[in-house]
Image (tube, rainbow, N blue to C red; front, side, top):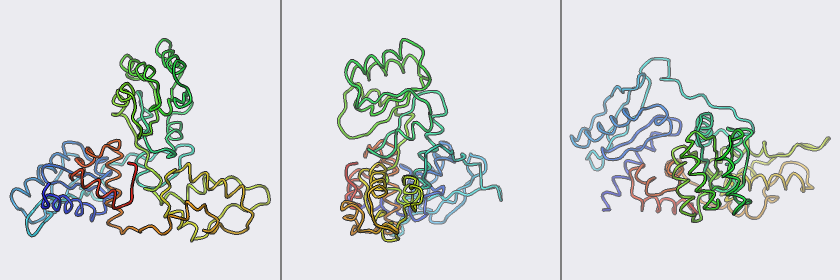
Length: 381
């Protein structure tokens, strides 16, 4: 890719991010690719998105430098298209959506579900929970993916309570194959949860694929941790489940959820003992940590402090583990950098960690995705 191509794609991404797309309906396009915010994807049909992409291409082709409004096929919405310029040349457009009916706020959003044990208010977490609740409430399989410790099994149990479970990391070989085959020869006793599907025995994975081919509406839920290479049978199973998947965001992408998580993870104090509290400096230290172990790591830190500390008063930074305090000197990102990072990570979650597909969805080169991840110190994705 030429330097000019890289500059153009980054200008388009920068124009998109300047519209603060978190929680807003924003689309950026150049006629070949488009970048769509979570809110725009919720609100608009494929017909409207394709129309915006064509009109953006028209602005590039015609060199149109003035903004204009466009009614959309989805009732209740219009878009204002703003050109994106590079040295006076139109290279794309950013569309900001607004409601056409005054006071309505546009078509109603999907109500946010309330699930037992599920806490967090960040945009990425709420989007994952809403998708899991919608897919989990329908017949058919559900795949919950994410890094270790993000709470995949907890979310799966919340949306499909009472499921019969098997942990493929603990049950192997003939036992796993027999367990799956029993599901195929007799009525399934309610919902089924298979944890750590990446560890499935190839025979068990093949049996699950056959079961889903025979009974596509089987209420199977599976959790998956991407990373290690898996067998061809497991890859085939994951491909079968991919259309109904939910990506759980890692904790480092949603530091705003830390206060409510810390409160939820803190054990109930013994009678006569005060609850666990935190100094401002300790909370900031928690926010700067990358949390490679995600919520499971946070739970371990909170539980250990609650059970073993002998000091009184709020928790201070020096009481935190060395691994947590060691991240305190990390580089702090500006608002535009955080928005850019979040957009890239959201695309990676949507496409199961596939960098080529994420880059295509964002309209940027795969090499740019790698470079941006390195610049933000994100590894292991």
